[in-house]
Amino acid sequence: MQKLTFFGLFVAAAVARAQAPAADFHVTGGAITYHLVHKMHKVDATSHKVEGKARILPDGKAQVMVRAPSESFDSGNVNRDAHMKETVEAAKYPWVELKALGDGLVAPAAFPATVHKTFKAQLTFHGVQQVFDVPVDVTWESATSVKAATHFAISLDGYKIERPSLMFVKVDDELKLDATLDFAR
Image 1 (spheres, rainbow, N blue to C red):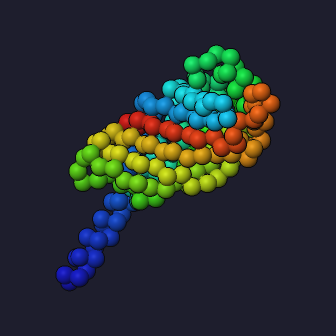
Image 2: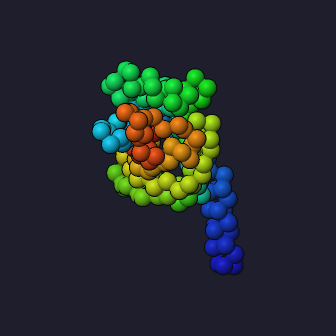
Image 3: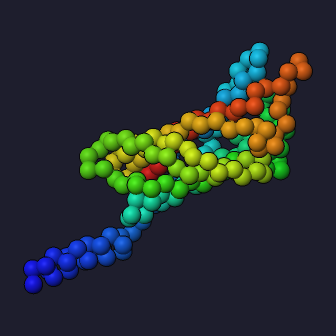
């Protein structure tokens, strides 16, 4: 009889976990910065107009969607930014969007705590979608506040973007991206 009781408690706990609500978070702040290199200089441009949400399911699976307007990246040089908006066809493709899935993301027993995860991500940029792995540092500040930081690179050629040039020399193909985002419940 005791085995049946233990088994019953085990099943009840599993059912309770399965019925537990997902934890929904939304972006409350942060930034996405791109880094572009030309032989003569380096360009850094940042967008603070990031929006998005994340859902963490009771089994630790995470679903994330984050996006920023293509025209919102500011390098501090109006002419350069206007040229980049033309280059990435911001009017035709107004959003840069990342959707990601991860596993094993559960709130820790004590705060703050940082975990390193790899998410399977789909980045839509300039009308092109590519899927790749993205490393993410997830810092739980509390059960209702999470920071996420990632650093990765993409190929401008891979997203069918005609690389800008200065004095007949094109910028490097690699575009590095840094994102630091605040999520809250």
